[in-house]
Each structure stands twice: as structure tokens, then as C-alpha cells.
Length: 344
Ligand code: NDP
Ligand code: GDR
Image (tube, rainbow, N blue to C red; front, side):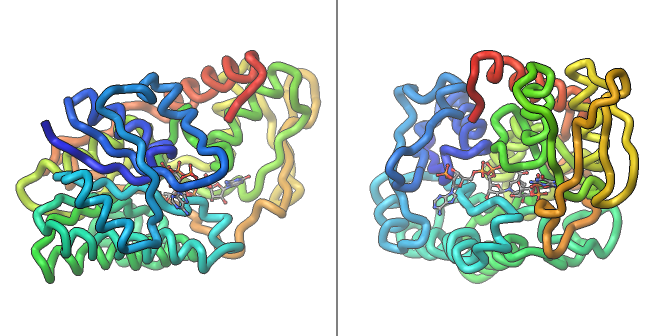
């Protein structure tokens, strides 16, 4: 039986990865941060919160001794580092905290691996945000980085740290450069889930209008459950490496809005441009979506489109769920939740 640590068990990917590893017979240590009320809703929704092989442990990413004790206590063979301050917009308001958690936190784990057991296999959650102001389209493992947010800069530090430990100390450190991946377990602050939750609420008469920022941003959105499979495959390979996971399709935020409202039976017509843009219900003429400049970012990533051919070639990984299917799945989950009167 293999033992794995997943940092960030309370997040979207942490929950799906825990489900995957438990299904493969792993003993899983899932770490969470201490707060007055920890929320395990995702692993509860997946029905694994009480799994006999799942151990929930408190862990502080910023504390090296805590990292050392975690590795000593669990004797894990694999560490998946998913915990991070992961919300790009917040990183502009809290750049230093983001650097400490999302950047330096990774170095604590790498140092702990070097000290406790350099044979541990390590997965670092790198991101397409590192491409930022993109230097070519589509982006692959060779595309130069140009981060556009404190989050992207912190992730780039972590990314290069993992490569440096791979090259300096022969540590099996893999970087997955994952493009946006979504699911019914996505946090409500991210744009896809904000949209599917609002479309469900508007359909149910619980909300009048959805406010968004930049509708022109383009993202390569895939299904999170498939992406965690890619993380696992990276750590099973014969050599540590860096891989892009993406769908190779890009769509605008506006496209996703149209798709989500269509999934609740509402056809939208868009009018105006920039901060004047609105979307109305074609049938009733009611304004259902408007732009609020508060949701604009100081610097934006305009277009992401990933080329996952290396992952397909070397790991046999590929994305299978279309954006339409993903969007419908998210809308249906949000309709069910809002009918019951709550959504996290
Ligand atoms: P989530 O935001 O859903 O989860 C982030 C996790 O990190 C949560 O468990 C959260 O805990 C934890 N965390 C946040 N702040 C701290 C902190 N100060 N100390 C300890 N833990 C903390 O992210 P995802 O699951 O979507 O993403 C997983 C990883 O992959 C992240 O590193 C993200 O940056 C990266 N990534 C994500 C992509 C995506 O599209 N989803 C794409 C590329 C990379 P809590 O519940 O307490 O907040
Ligand atoms: P992103 O995801 O920044 O790509 O980071 P997010 O869903 O937050 O934004 C995507 C795009 O939508 C635009 N946008 C809005 N975004 C939010 N959150 N809220 C809005 O109201 C809104 N209106 C428009 C944004 O400007 C942006 O262009 C995600 C995170 O999961 C990161 O952790 C991860 O590394 C990257 O994906 C890949």
C-alpha cells in the first residue's frame, strides 16, 4: 500500500485527487490549515470524508519544522502540493501573503524532502498563469513565461524551485502546468462557478442580475476530475518532468455565460461594449448580466490556449469532457444545491 500526502485537501483538486488515490488503495494524508471552522464540504460531497484510509492532518505551509514532522510521521512516498492562495484577483490585494503561501511554502516542502527522504516523489501545482502575457499561441512546455499577477510570480518561483531541486539534488519533482480546470466543486469566487451558480439562482428566482468583470478574457477550461489523473500519472513516470495539461480549446467568459444560461433554458442577447456591456433575456427583455469594473484586474491575462501533446505522448493523458458538458454538469449541480437552499 502506497502512502501519499495531499496538501490542500479542502480545495477542489485536493478532493478529487483524494478520491482517485483512495480508489487506487493508497493511504492518504490530507492537510488543511487551522481555522476556527474548517470546511470539508467537498470531500463530504464526494462521500470520502470518513474513508478509513483518509487521515486529515493540520499543517502550516509556512513552517519548515511542520513540513519535516509531516514527512517523518507519514512516511509518505508521494507528496502532491496543491495548497496555495489560488485566487488571482486576491493576490493583487495580498501579494505578500500570496508569495509566502504560494511561493515560499513550496520551498519548505522541498527542503523537508531533501532533509527527511530525498526519494519522495513530489508534484508541484504549476499553472498557465505563469504564461501571463503570452509569448506564443498555443502555449506548451517550451513557451517563455511572463506572469501578470503576484499569484503568477509566486507560482513561477515555486516552479523553478522544483526544477532546481530536481537538477541539484536528484529529487523526483514534477511540475504540472495545468490550465484552468473546473467542476461542480469549484470555489464560488472563480468565474465559471460564479456564473453557473448565478444562472441557477436567476432561473429559480433567487437573484436578479449577475455582475462580472472582463468578458473578453479567453481561457482553456477543462474538467478537474480528469486533471488530477494527470497529476498521478506524472508521479508514476520513469523520470521527473514538466507537463502541460489543457484541452487545446479556448473560449471567452462571454461564451461561458451564454452556455450556462442556455443550460437553464435562457437565451441571452448581448448589447454594448466594455463596461457598458449587458446581456438581456431575449424572451423577456430583462437585463440578467452586467459588467462591474470592480471585477477588472490591474493586469489581465488575455488568452490562454494550451498544447497538451507532450502529456498525451508520454503519459497517455488527454482531456475528454467538452466545455458544454462541463458547464451543464456545473449548472445542474448548482440548480440542485440552490433548490435545497444552499451552495458553498
Ligand atoms: P482551491 O482554491 O480550490 O484550493 C486551494 C487549497 O489551498 C485549499 O485547500 C485551501 O484551504 C488551501 N490554502 C489556501 N490558503 C492556504 C494557506 N494560507 N495555508 C494552507 N492552505 C491554504 O484550488 P484548486 O483545488 O483549484 O487548485 C489546486 C492547486 O492547483 C492550487 O495550488 C492552484 O493554485 C493550482 N492550480 C489550479 C488550477 C485550476 O484551474 N483549478 C490551474 C492551475 C494550477 P482552505 O480551504 O482552508 O482555503
Ligand atoms: P483565473 O480564474 O484567474 O484564470 O485563475 P478566474 O476564474 O478567477 O478568472 C478567469 C477570467 O475571468 C475573468 N473574469 C472574472 N473572474 C472572476 N473570478 N470573477 C469575475 O467576476 C470575473 N469577470 C471576469 C478574469 O478577469 C479572468 O480573466 C484560475 C485559478 O484557478 C488559478 O489558481 C489557476 O492557476 C488558473 O486558473 C489557471
